[in-house]
Image (cartoon, one colour):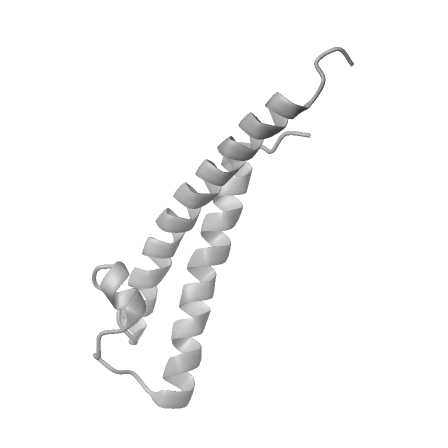
Length: 88
């Protein structure tokens, strides 16, 4: 069974982007906004623990998760195609 690359990429992008958004707001709710550089801030340019930073993280997460999901689905389809019998 092959994966739909576009659908899987969109799903991964949405999940990763929304996870960053929710995680940022979770931290803001309990610790407050901060301009300190975080690990994600060193990976995603412009991201920090703030309302604007959560939107920037959402955008980066959509792009990063989408690209990662597309690569994963494409590799999966290549590997599955090589291991299945074409006679059936």
